[in-house]
Length: 221
Image (cartoon, rainbow, N blue to C red; front, side, top):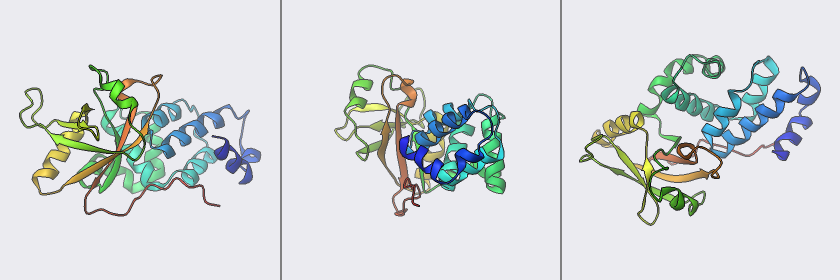
């Protein structure tokens, strides 16, 4: 956060920011989480911004990569109870024509970040505590799952059950598996126990022939 605040000051945003700056802190919290790959922590912070003025939008665009904003919009679209909400509308205005394609994002994305759900069952949270960023995790199709034949389980590097990809995403990836695609995954970030169990673990999933990472976290300049 301090590094982000210094970058904002260096680029003159503090002088241009309207109001008392309280929403700037909220925005920076959201940006910080997004850049760590904790998309849902970032989404929850950004949802508290009441006014998306031009300087706020400019700062979000400058500090978060375009690809990560698209990924975030897709996560929000597929998980929101009210997909017409203000944050999704704001992201759509930033993304322009690409925003209209968010609903098909997961059908073709070569690489994306998503959350793992179902972590509140059994000993799964204890298993999550053992994970570190960069560790591989394994995606296991469960065609015999009586609740959802499209279910995709997420397994730890040592083979224990962590949770699942959410059902809507699993159905899409099943279709891609059936079309011959293969996916790998790794841990991006693990949040502490103060966060909702279903939002603590974020993983990056990629198609195995997609070798170029698209998420850049360096501030550069």
